[in-house]
Amino acid sequence: MALPVGVKGSAELERIEIDLLLEGIFRHYGLDFRGYALGSLKRRLARRMREEGTPTLSALQDKVLHDDAAMERLLVSLSISVTAMFRDPTFYRAFREKVVPLLRTYPFIRLWNAGCATGEETISLAIILEEEGLLDRARIYATDFNAGVVEKARSAEFPLARMKSYTENYLKAGGKKEFSRYYAADGPVARFSSELTQNMVFAQHNLVSDGSFNEFHGILCRNVLIYFGNPLQHRVHELFHDSLVNFGVLGLGHKETIRFTPLEHCYEAIDSREKLYRRVA
Ligand SMILES: C[S@@+](CC[C@H](N)C(=O)[O-])C[C@H]1O[C@@H](n2cnc3c(N)ncnc32)[C@H](O)[C@@H]1O
Image (tube, rainbow, N blue to C red; front, side):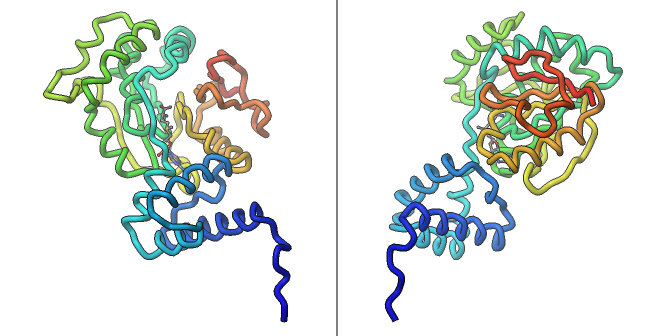
C-alpha cells in the first residue's frame, strides 16, 4: 500500500516531533514544557540538536530519554537563566518610589521572587529593602524550577567582573550608597553580605506544576512568563492571584503584562510602564 507521502508539510511534522519530545520528557522526567511558547522552544531545540549532533528532533528525543546528562543539558538550554542585578533600573526606581510606601504599611512583609535564576534580582530587592529600613521585617522567598540556579542563588556570589555594570544599574535605579559596601571581593568573586541574605528562603518551585505555598504582600516574576504560551501564562496568573494578599503587588518584566489576561480586572496599575500592579479583587 502506498503511504500518503507529503500530506503533512514539514512545519506540521516539526510540530508533531516537538509535541512528542515534550510529552516524552514530561512522562519520563516529570518536567512539563508542554505549555511553553513555541518560538523560543524551537530556537532552543534547534541549538540543542546542533550541539548534541542529532539530525532530527526525534533523534534528540531518543537521546534525552536515554541519557540523563543530555536531558540536564537540555534543561539548562530551556531554562534561559540570563539575569542581572538591577536589570531594567527604571523598574527598581519605580519599586522604590511606588511600592515601598505600600509595603511600609505592613508589620511583616513576605515577598516571592519567582523564577529568581541565580539570585541577582533577589539581592537587588534586598538592597532596596535594606536602604528603606524594611529588610529586618521582610522575608524573601526566592524560587526557580532549576535546582542548579537555586544553589547558585543561595551562595550570593557573582562574578566580580560584573560589578561595574551592576554599580551603574544600581545608581540608575536610585541607589543611595556606595555599591561596593554590599559585597566583599574574593578573587574573581563578589560575595554579598550575609545581612542581605539572612531573611531569604531559597527553594525549588515549578510554576507549571507546583501550587501556592504562602500568602505574599508582593510577587516579582520578571522575564519568565514571556517564555510561556498564553494558556500557561493564565494558569500562572491564577497561581499568583491565589498567592497575593488583597492589595498585594505584582511585578512583571517589561515585555510582560496582566492586560489581556482573564484576571486583568483583579488588578489596578501602580505603574503600567514598569508593569507594577496591585491586586484589588
Ligand atoms: C530569563 S530568567 C529571568 C531571571 C530574573 N527573573 C530576571 O528577570 O532577571 C528566567 C528564569 O525562569 C526560570 N523558569 C523557567 N521556567 C520555569 C518554571 N516553570 N518554574 C519556575 N521557574 C522557571 C528559569 O529557570 C530562569 O531562571
